[in-house]
Image 1 (cartoon, rainbow, N blue to C red):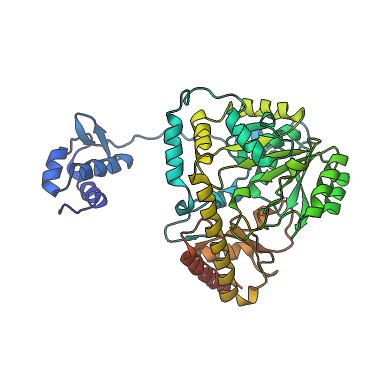
Image 2 (cartoon, helix red, strand yellow; image 1 turned 180 degrees about the horizontal axis):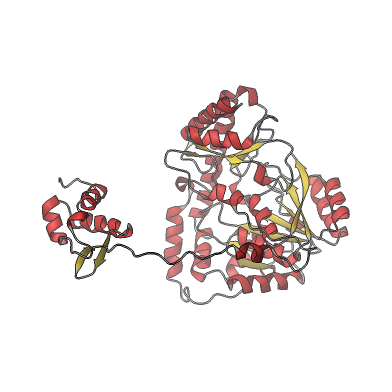
Length: 479
């Protein structure tokens, strides 16, 4: 075997020779394997580690590697059917059964198979993430005095102040809690604001992760339709009257999945309607930092125009950085803040201090505005490429994307009314492109089939062109 032989090749060779050794028998030493196969000690070490991970060998420091003994019969398989009743039985027939369905979220979290173009991703491609800036920020943060100690329960004061400035209006650092990602902030908010069995008004369509949170908490999501200008106020008022709900969850900026921005004339109406209903508005401001280069001035968060504490605001750094950079803020004013704080403490104690310190280092560095400008340019280019490719390859569906957003990372693509959404998704995957079905974005029956097409998780514009071509082939196969 030549020196250039890979770890995999050496592992395959050793695997084929294992029958020469009895269970528990010792394999040749690493030095002997190096000399025999003419590879480096690192290659030998990694090949043995691979076999150990497969359960074929056991390595013992200082003693060597040994063929693993056959596993004995596993423990007896018990009868877990009783859990079906335990998990669904409810002491009160009036309460909504608590179900946990993560399928709508996993679509954008699970990595597609090799060679499949990722139109279903929910985060920036690694080439768009500020990896060097994050690494440098974490390194600097780790050297700060007290960086590994217990942080303040509400979060570092400087980080809370930074988030408060971004929200604006009357919101101060005292109104902000640091949370571990937007999903955690939404979970805390819904648990604090509505008891199990209560209705919660949601945009339709809306983010599946929020619907999953609501249902897992035993809440009843009630849909309120949106159009190109966001939620429709008269339908929101009707929904409050019909249900008696005390919570409305919305994404006023670049809504997921439609990309809609709540129109200026509707902003005050939404707050007024909620205030008259004695209800809270949970504002999920999830992609404010993923604005496109051609966007005009952004509307301020609803929370900045709310003197009465109607809005509970959630915003995060995650979408603009990395899936693992889970630092976000939950802002509220009035007595509700204490309840939000109590639930967060019970659930998570606090966000790890090194991560909070790293967030402060990152957003305070010159690299941060440079990163946001670069992402704004690249997302616009990718959006334009996807729109152009859709119109080129899918001429019959030219107007299926009704709204071209100036922020966010996806397009909302309407399929023909007679299309089988699940069949299209499956056919697309067979063609080598992963897309997100529209059905999980609706809390009730959807008016028509849709796909959500992400342009942020792919490697570049060439991959977008190829992905749309594959999607065209899938549509031709099933329509």
